[in-house]
Image (cartoon, rainbow, N blue to C red; front, side):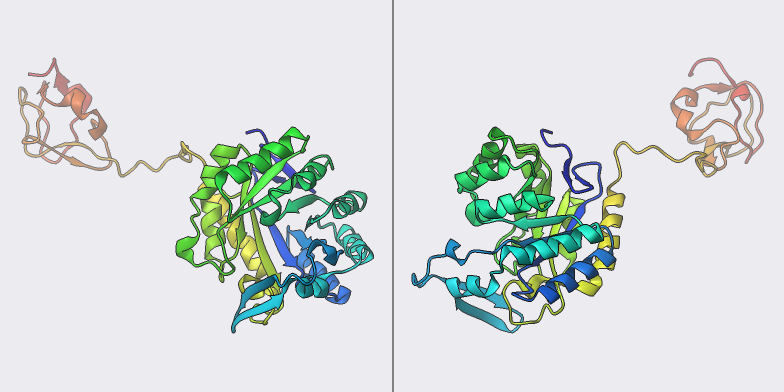
Length: 353
C-alpha cells in the first residue's frame, strides 16, 4: 500500500490500526463560538476521536445573485435556501477558527477541516491542523489539490457522486505534488441515504484500486452503516454529531446525538476487533477431549477386520483416534478386544486385508 498508515495527529489510519472516528460538527454551530467550543469539549470527553469541521471564512466561494439553491433534508421534511445566503450565515472569521483550534490543542484532540481555498489551507498549517479534507465538489479543483499536497498535511478526499476516474485523477494529482498521505472516504450519496444505496463494497474496491486507507462519510440516519463499513475494512468513519438531529438545519438529519459517542466508539472498536486475522491459530491448550476414537461394536477376535461393521466411535479417543481411520481401516486385529472397549494400536497387525 502506497499509504499504509496515514497519521492524523496521533492516530494511525490504515489496515492493522483501529478505525479512527471523525466527529463531524460541520457548520452545525453556525456563528456561535460558544456552541463550537461546547462541541469540542464534549467530543474530547467521549473518547479517542478527531474533531472535524469546515473552514468557511469567505462567502465569495459562492457567487451572489446567481439563483443557485441548496436543498437539504431534515427530520420534518426538506428546506431550500439560497446557496449564497446559506454560506453567509455559516461563515466565520479565521480568528473564530483560531480560537477553536487552540481549544482542541488544549484538549489534545486532532483538528481536521474541509478547506475551500488556499487561505484556509495556509491557516490550517499555521495553526497546527492535523489533516485537510477536500469536498466532493472540489475533486476537480487542481490548484486547491496541489496546494493541499504541498502543505505537509494528509488529505482526505470525499468520493461522493463521482466517477471512479475522477477520484483516481484527484489522488494521483495529490501524490504527484508531494502529498504526505491520502485517504479516500466513500460517500454513498444524498443526506440521508437509504441502506440499499450505500454500496459499501466500494470500500475494499477503493483500497485495491487506490492503494490507500479508505473510510466512510456516514450519511445514514442511524448507526448500522458505520459498523458494516468497519466490518468491510473501513479505516476511518466520519459521522456528524450534534445536540439535536431532529433540528430543521442543514446536514444534521443523519448526525448522531453527541451523548451517544462513547457507545458508538465502543461498538466500532468491537466490530474492528472481531475482524481478527486469517488463518486463525487455536488457543492452547486446546479442548480436544470430545474427539472420538475407535471402539469395538461387539467382542472382536484375532483376525477380525477393522471396518464400520465391527467398530464404532466414541469419545474420548482412548485408543485409535478417528482421524487415523484411513491408516486403521481394513487391517486385522492381532488380539481380542471386548465389546465397548477402545481399539488400541497394539491390537492391530499387518497391512490392510
